[in-house]
Structures are given as C-alpha cells and as structure tokens.
Image (tube, rainbow, N blue to C red; front, top):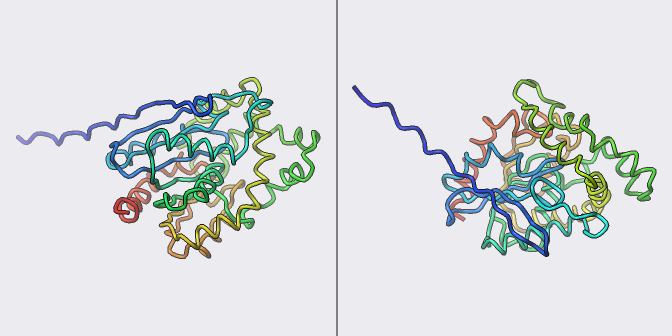
Length: 298
C-alpha cells in the first residue's frame, strides 16, 4: 500500500522591526535570505496585513519583505505635529529600511499608496528595480476620476473645511466599502479585514495622519511624468493584475501603462480595490509565473 504524498512544509513568516530615524518600522519577512527580493508595498487604509496570504505563495523561492509605513499596522505612529507624513518621507524611510536589512535589488508589488512610494524609490535607484507588479496603483492622470474630485478641492486650498469634508474616509463605513465595493462574491471577503484596519484607524491622532497623507498625495501627481519616464527609459518587466471594478483607482488608470511599458502582461480582474482578498487564487499563479520568468534570472 503506497503512502500518501507528504504535505508541503509550511512557510515560516518572520515578524521583525527596524529603527529608522528613531521610528520603529515593522515588516514581515519570509523566504531564503539569498533569494531574489520581492518588496510588497501596501495601500490605504491597511498595512502589510493585506499580503498575509500572498507571502507564503512566493516565499519558497523569493525573499519577500512587506513593511508597514509609519502610522500603519504595527509601525510606530508619531504625532503628526512632529513627524512629516509625506510620500517623499515614506520613500526615504523605505529606502533606509532596505539598506539596513541588506537589500540592493528588488521587484516591487505596488498597490494604492504603495505606487507613489515605490515609484519614488525607483526614481532614487532605477538600477535596483528588477520588476513591477502593479495592482490598482496610479501613475497617470487618466486614473484620477470622480472619486478624487473632493480630494482635489482639498489639495487646492488645504482648508479646514475641505479637510473635515473628507473625514468620512477614515470611518468604518468607508473602510468596509473599500473591501466590498465591486466584489461579486462577498462570502470570499473576511470581515476581519475592516475590523483590523478600523481598529488602527481609530487610534488617537490617526485620523490626522491619514488626512495629512491625503493632502500630500497632491505632490505625487506632478511626478507622474517622471514615473512615466522611468518606465520608458528602463523598461522594467511589468505585470498588471488590477481590480477593474475599483471606484478609487478604476481601470482607466491601468491602460495607460501600456503606452510606456508595451510589454506589460496585462490582466483586469472582476473585483474591486483589494483584489487579493477574493482573487488570490487567480493572482498568485500569475505573479509567481511572472517572477519565475522575468525576475528570478535578472
């Protein structure tokens, strides 16, 4: 009688932290220390938690690193009156973290806020980027549609009135919306997601952190031409796996990448903003195949 096949050995994920300029930065890490690095950059209003299910699908071969930005997840959240919550600062801190843990080259998974953080990193060190996995992360003005109109009003004057008008974005209703909008089968979305994220958003002072970042997002838009020039000049291998029903970063923001990265492997998925929550079974094989073909040998 033959024995049943042995089950795959579970992947061990390590939960670490590093101190950058006196601020604790938490990160998840898994995989071989000498493997090609995949840097996972999260979006709003979540953290590296959004990658908890993807990490084990990659970490048998790749060194996977998923940090939390200051003000998110398990990283420190200094008072916004004394700490600069900007995308430029985040990119500098992620750069410092990678230097501290000995990462010199990396593919990046960029999503939502992770796109401007990652693309700012790419502008600093274009030679270090071995590939891009792009999921609902914008680099083109075509992707900033009606959802962004009240945010643009805030950008225009930075007024208290327009700031307070956006306070609904840090409520439980808005957090739940980001996980459920555009999803066909809600039974695939764990409510733990918005309970977890909202508990962190509700920490004292965190709403001001989020509104500061929303205001600073305006500084990313003038950099879009530089991001696009990076794509054209360096032609990093790219995979788009984009939730096409996303209200915040709709599919109109996905198509323009093909102008500058014509070899992009392009997939629009029938889901919303946090595509990994219900489409991991489709996305993980696409991501793994892309990394194995385009990144592992670079």
